[in-house]
Image (cartoon, rainbow, N blue to C red; front, side, top):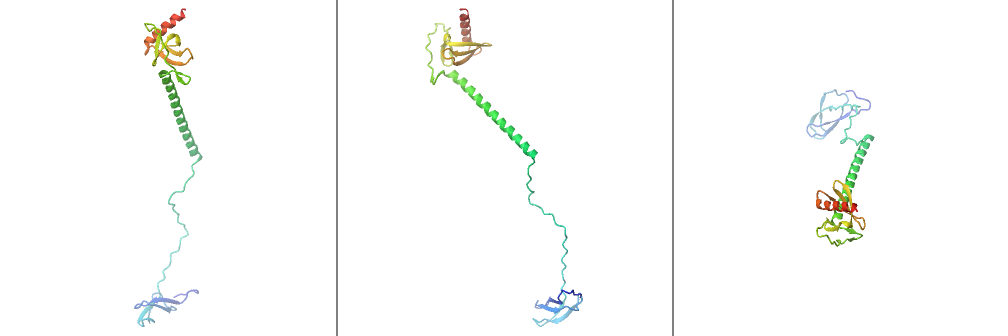
Length: 199
């Protein structure tokens, strides 16, 4: 057996009977050679031999690629950020216009309904005017739940048989009268305006 300078000639071999560790000088032993000796522990004859040395495989210098459990987070590009900003801006603008349109429509409808259902003068609801109608009722029109004399009103013809009606005392808008829904009142107004325009 070839011994290197820094390798000890003493090796250990287990006893075949008591498994005691027998240390012996391996100088002169050949590979695969066995010798019979007396075990210093159990005093029985046993064979000693050079233990088979396992040669550790040489480690390769190639480093294994480390697998990450999750891919690293990547920062969004400037194009993605700009696209997100545009989308968010368009959604905000759409919501704003929808809300504004809804509010304006609600206000206009509310004002129209309020003007038809009740007459407001200052902070108080105006009393229904006292009317002394002609026996044939040709000098009055019905606006909502109130009856007005034609000489108390400002009557503006806007076209296609449609009249805008305002109160003469304060110019407050009262209603629209059209020839479809209020045919009788339109006839009264036309006759009244014709009569007064000839004077």
